[in-house]
Length: 372
Image 1 (cartoon, rainbow, N blue to C red):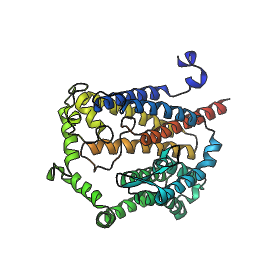
Image 2 (cartoon, rainbow, N blue to C red):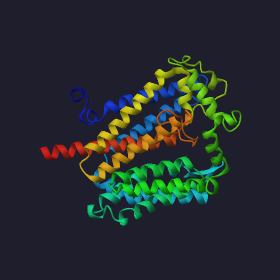
Image 3 (cartoon, rainbow, N blue to C red):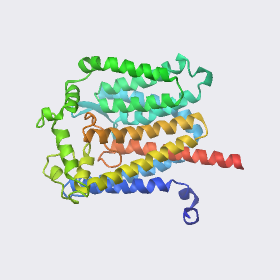
Image 4 (cartoon, rainbow, N blue to C red):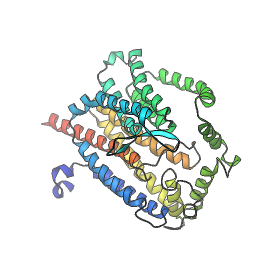
């Protein structure tokens, strides 16, 4: 039907994903409007403008040719790595962290760009690696270095949440490349052994306190456990249908911290209840299922790894944020995709969406070529 109504370039877009995604962004704008006590210009307006701008960016990404993307993988990784080094040298400090690079015309957080970039460079690396070398250490050590260098720079900022996101995307891509499962089991065991050492010697004081708060938030409900306690109160008080749009007491009376960013889901759940939560999860399910389908239908190793890693990146954002606001994970400052107010998060996730549309277009075009 869409092919008879829309021009060919528009008819080829995944509207089954873009329409629910746009509804989720609009729903997020409504939540942000309420979080700002009915002021559209505080959060909601910029949220919608950013989505519109980055949707155009995603559409541009979706028409990029395969050769350009493959050839640009290593240069893009190198440029972002240099930007991360620049953050350490001249980056701006905000909230006790040095994460931003002021380029004059834009204030950029390079660590956000590294999330899709690490997936891209690893997909490029493994697509050029002979299958016979998959179980060789030469399949692991270069990839480990590609991940470790940017993660180390990000942890210096310090930004544990982004470091974990980059690591997760990289590890998923390496796993999908078919490396031996025993290596991942060994890595998991090593991580368990190293966790206590990291806790005492690598984490900052506030990061250690977040871990303790996660384990027992009620031990200090008015101090370090305040965020999680108020978030769970907001979610639980919403019930099935919520308190009604604009009637959330936790956010409006300033009990709930960061109601427009990290804890936007709690703000939503208080006013829209279980119904609003299920809608949010449904849209994320549609997006993630589409991403997995794009990866499964891809014609070659490069596109399969790229699609799988990018889908995992979106999943990590959503899963960690939802776990965090419900007290199932420590607070690590990761926003909820497409709902939280924040340009860098929107940019990263729309890069992933645009890249998945690009891969789907490649697959469709190559399939048509074979049939022809």
